[in-house]
Image (cartoon, rainbow, N blue to C red; front, side):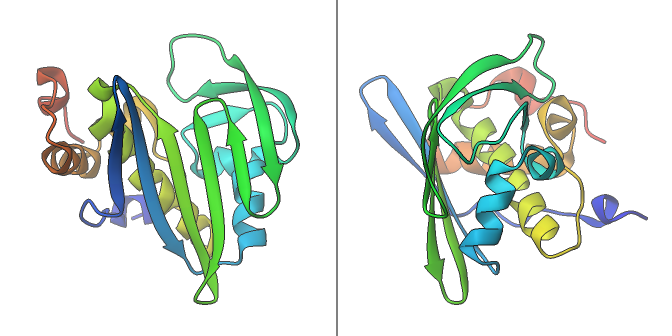
Amino acid sequence: MTDREQYTPGPASGAQVRKDGEKWTLILVRELRHSPEKVWQALTDPAHLREWAPFDVDGSLAKVGTVTLTWVGAPTQGFETKVSRADAPKVLEYNDTRWELEPFAGGTRLTLWHNIDRRFISMGAAGWHISFDALDRLLAGQPIARLAGPDAMKFEGWQRLNAEYAKQFGVELPSWAANAPKH
């Protein structure tokens, strides 16, 4: 049995939604047992991102500039992404995403702000929840490998989280998401 086969995500927690008219922002907070510098490297280095994030990049996110970002399982090629702020190891901003890292209890409080379409808010929360778990385990030296895109949606833990976050946020699950095949 691999670490991935033994992995079960905890209950939906640490997420909230902010609404500003038609704009929805998903905010996820996770406390990690690792230094801000170590977390920063995992957020910005393409090799680290391939281990936990739901996307790949063709260059470092640690400096202001442009990279190509490709979401795992997306039917289209990657798209140009502008890193607008890279204040190591505190704040990282690109496109519709902002990461904040704060020293906390010997580790890091990591906050993700992600603008997302309302229809996908619970799905995004479930996906990021699992990605944060993969990040935490990677940093602890116990990687489970990323679980993202279509593979994540088939994962029973993702389906449970999607339903829990939908209930927390007061949104309906699309029928196709509620009936996705499990494995």
